[in-house]
Image 1 (cartoon, rainbow, N blue to C red):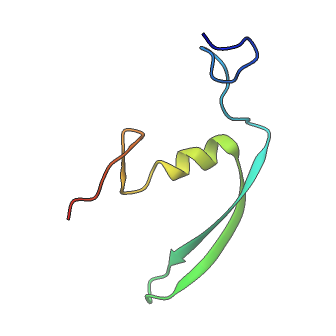
Image 2: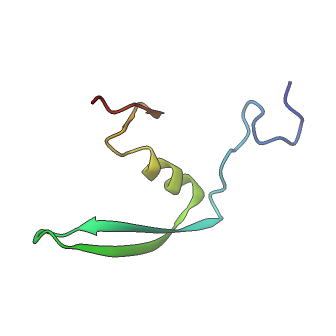
Length: 66
């Protein structure tokens, strides 16, 4: 059983909607060059972005087939 103040107990908020994370990534432009993009997003949005990529399906990481 999870501790009372644990963020992993049922109904607990796992990520803060107030804290922000600086997110830097490389973005490909139309001409093929890459540029760095940095923004500051909430923890919740940061985690959502990480799970939206092509190697994710329904929130779970999938292996690339070779």
